[in-house]
Image (cartoon, rainbow, N blue to C red; front, side):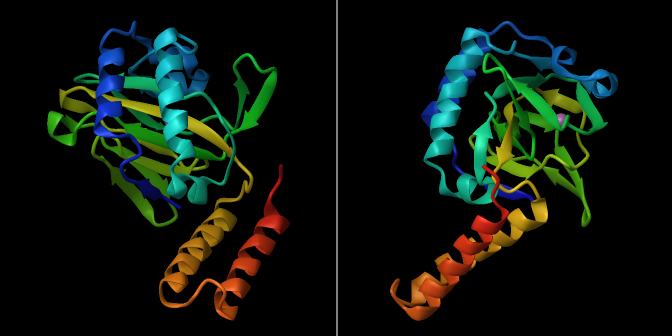
Length: 227
Ligand code: NI
């Protein structure tokens, strides 16, 4: 399931991110890639744990906390600190898979990556190429969103970033361990959540239909959630 989340960051927050990233010390993105992914990866990243990365990571985590769409789609249990990358002209990231298990920095814990997120920080008018292409059972989906919007997709998907032919594409990306690890189950819960919201537009919240559907939602979540 691919879910676009609009307006995650306000224009002021996007501007703040860009200002801080402008002064950040970018390094070769191979630093955080596994052996296989490093062959495919040609981009720049802000070092993990740097002051810039921590400050902006907090801005993004706060924004996620107030975002009902992200919470409904990802059903987050834990979110890794957001990272930041950049693709200048000629840079790309060929088809690869993200690692299944990642260390949580400083916490002595690991996280199973179920859900990947890319938050766009550059206006699409400012660069050419650079689409995030995500493969699933329905084919390949090219994603390029306005600054402040993000795409949420299953970490099980092969994905790539097309070469940049003009400008520079900046974004944040991060992994989430979901309470529900299976993408198909998460998709069902998300569809049901949307159906309940739609039903509540035409029926009162205490109607039997709304109460029963909500009960089904919670009973499915109870059955599938791992905490
Ligand atoms: Ni990736």
